Amino acid sequence: MIGAIGLLCALAAATPASAAKRRTYAFDVIDAHVSEVITFQSDGGPACQRAGLCGYSGTVTYEFDHADGFALVLARGRRATGFGGVQMGGLTTATVQGPGGGPPCTDKVIDRFDGFLVEGSPGRPQLVFHSPVLAPQFLDTYCAGPRDVDVARLIPRLPVGSLSRRSLVAQTSSTQEFHAGPFVGTLSFSVGVRLRRSRLLSGSLSGTF
Image 1 (cartoon, rainbow, N blue to C red):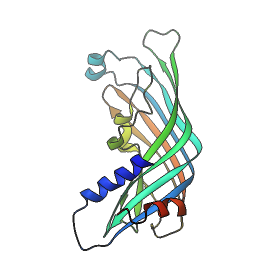
Image 2 (cartoon, rainbow, N blue to C red):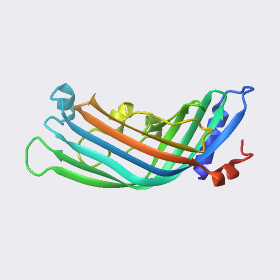
Image 3 (cartoon, helix red, strand yellow):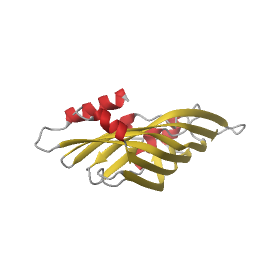
Image 4 (cartoon, one colour):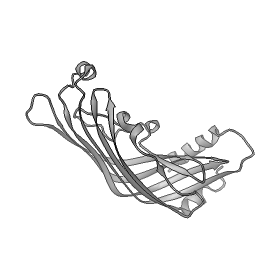
């Protein structure tokens, strides 16, 4: 919580001075789920040859369900910036077949915390999951394969309603092809979030900015 408030203070300091009124919003994340599935193979070109990864293929999956947390947003004029976090029992699993046959590489990683940025305007904010700014590592395993930075640009933004509402509900999903480094494949991503105005957090932030 202290770190999140510190981040919000930094966002406030970075906001250009103007006559626009500054306002903070605090929400409880009462439910959130994410599913990220990457199916990939090496591209067979110079990139995989240089990396020594030709002939690799597999699937990496990251997902969590029924998570809760918080979100803090600073609005000034037509700009809204903020951060949200959820505590969850996320799981990353990888199954990757190498070029020589034999048993595949398998790995599982447990994740305890995920976060998102809030960007846009007070009337039309968007939640941004796995932004490169947050240096996500949810796809990192011992097996060869794409990493978060390779597909972050393909993850859809999640529009939510006006920050003035007491509750916000949004979900979206997409499936896109990618080519990053030595790998080509498909990213399927889905996310859903329910937020509700937090009286406790709003009270603790009153007078902070």
